[in-house]
Image (tube, rainbow, N blue to C red):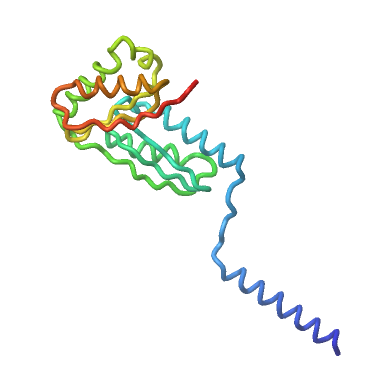
Length: 183
């Protein structure tokens, strides 16, 4: 009798567990650390390879499991959708949350971008940053307000970029978010 009630209890427990698992929403495990690193590398690579991604655009991303969040600012609306499309097609990415801001078109901002580029990258002590296709100092201009994003080699270079940006006439403010990365 004891064995029979034990068998019935085990059968009932198994049926209950099966019913719960069928009704529970399908949840996928988090990717392994290696898989997460691969997704991050591929997202970075695909974003850097975008044909119209330039010095006046700033795209950041966050990978959380199989989800990627895109952030930042771009000058061209097509760059926002291009970034989302290339990330969507990366193996392992299930969802892309595109929070990239498209900067408003403005002839004044366009003029300031060119002047800032010349003031920063045309200045001899900072010309080492002008080498290569992807510039390490991003110049974001929105309604006359400037934000500097990216990386430099030293605190002195960071301060020099800030001084050069503040010397351009017509700018309302400069926010220097440059990070110093030692080599």
